Amino acid sequence: MHEQTPAAPEAPSAAPSVDGTGPTLFDWEFATDPYPAYAWLREHAPVHRTTLPSGVEAWLVTRYADARQALADQRLSKNPAHHEGSAHAKGRTGIPGERKAELMTHLLNIDPPDHTRLRRLVSKAFTPRRVAEFAPRVQELTDHLIDQFVAKGEADLIHEFAFPLPIYAICEMLGVPREDQDDFRDWAGMMIRHGGGPRGGVARSVKQMRTYLGELIHRKRDAPGDDLISDLIRASDHGDHLTEAEATAMAFILLFAGFETTVNLIGNGVHSLFMNPDQRERLQASLAAGESELLATGVEELLRYDGPVELATWRFATEPFVLGGQDIAAGDPVLVVLAAADRDPERFADPDALDLSRTDNQHLGYGHGIHYCVGAPLARLEGQTALATLLRRLPDLELAVPAGELRWRGGLIMRGLRTLPVRFAVQTS
Image (tube, rainbow, N blue to C red):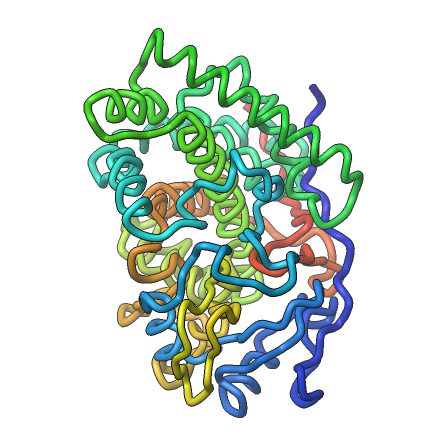
């Protein structure tokens, strides 16, 4: 199968607030730089009811304190059954195909006690020890991808690097055989076109991936290995009940959510370093000196400054309550704007400045509370490895087009570039 570059959805139409006040949201100008609009909302309407491009009315939460409260508030459910309004909101976390019943029973759409049970099963795969054991393989994958384009002197870092790296990594953790991983790369490339492109192609890719994962689970049950799917099966066989539908949905969400966030972490991170050359120089000097502290704090700062997830996935009020001075009705959709909260001057000093050495940095880039991203340790490893290896091996890396020509993918939840063309000195072996 041929490789595919993830394509952008169609530009969503502008969505003003319900009462017509405030900045215009969700058009292309906003997608390029949403931070001024979010600053206005934080100051004037921190919990703000707006009409989304889909026509759904939802609350946007933009201040850090309110966002942190909302992310952990048990009165906000992840189960879309609590929302009785437009079907556009039901079950939408940004994952294509998830409206199909067999893909709905995943961590982003359920509450305790089912969430507690499923998270306990999958969290065993992302312990610090297990992720550390996987680090050499992530380095091998990173170097292999760079090897494919170093002799050209140019590359699209999204298509040729940031996109395939997490796909191959999560495939290996799940236990997808290497001979099948390019198929996954193609299916995932089509799936993130869910806001545009051929809808039939997206549906076919979702069906192909769902069918493949179901068959793989059957094969792993007969011949388990040292991988996440086999671990889920073993745990289920030892009393932690896991239905086949849950296992398929779990593998699906780990693959999709796990790869797109890391694509954006790498792409947005490189872009932020290009836009802040003084910080890039600091990091390159630190890496050249064999130091790792600035890399670790730097990735956390890149997550805060322009992270991969712009809005946390849907939450629905199970009862009336007050949030940020606003009355939230039962059934109301609530969207926590991580990108806005992480630039709140009430929480972060000089929040619009990139400071790779920032240590007081309890950002919300991977969420908060019981739905904190289970794959965050792996994503951090991939982000650190990717950025460090790029800067070491391609020290003269630079944008190949004017920054103003870069385009961001449309969409509600994720924030990422369509392409990232770069150039560098040709390297030969």
